[in-house]
Length: 407
Image (tube, rainbow, N blue to C red; front, side):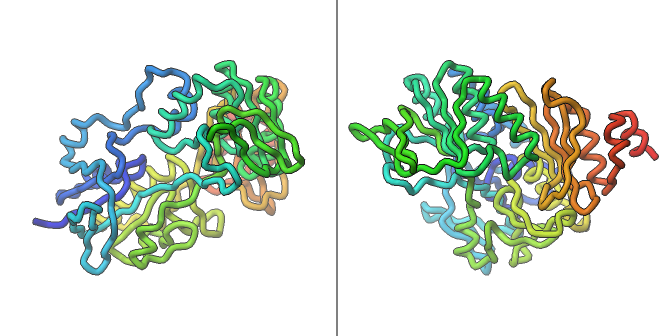
């Protein structure tokens, strides 16, 4: 039997890769391998809607029948022990093996862990998968004082959920501002104000000395200045690390993720990497990046399927875009903002609806939008075309930008 394509990892990218192969006309075997037992599901809601409603189930990406109809073999609840690039084979921990003609690694990322004293106390959680969210949902019901360590997207989304359920919430961030590495200063300050209005205490430029407990369970978070913040539940959201261990052990090039070329091939031409685990050259940014987003994983899956089918789509060059539901705010981002030297705000932050345009050396490189979805969609089109409208054009609004894009 033909070995076929094996997809390792069944998140958004892995699931999409299987269906994209069929859509591109691939007729050989397709095996989708995951160490999780569940059908692939949407992960963004885990820090929001899933936490709020004990009756809510994960939103599956596709029904099981869809995989059967597309002849995608599901190998779920199976943990891979090793990749053998020479033999073109995966070995599972149970000793069984699976051969491949092409391998697509879509193993995603794992949460960065605390190494502080007290990191192993009960009551300390993170969110990455359904099991994490279920454990947090159960613990949350009994909690009154919740500390969120890390002012990034996931931690803040959950903080808003906790506050909406009547919990006392404190967010602790070492950096000068929440979301400071991801959005413009104007958006960061706006989110900060909105969260404080929800009753959330936000401590920036704040380091943690230890987590303290009683009877093996977390009781407080001790700050480096000596203060103690009460906490009967702690959520850790301090970033993620790529799940590239199997690739490293197999001898593939690895550096903050699996190194791939512009067509998403690894150092082994029969192996591709996509999504959160892939470190790829980004044409517009002029540097290598590793992006953690649903859009990037799905688009890279579609690209790899074309390459496997010999359709030569060229270098992967999709414009990155992201979104995050932050309490009452819909935050959407397009492009990558590396070293911006100027910002232009359009709209009214006080009214809660505005966009911030990022420029570097006179070129538009990214756009943040708060409750302005039309701006976001236009931003994606502008960035994809490499266009930099004048300030007057941007201030004139969507109709003017649509006219420029049409021209």
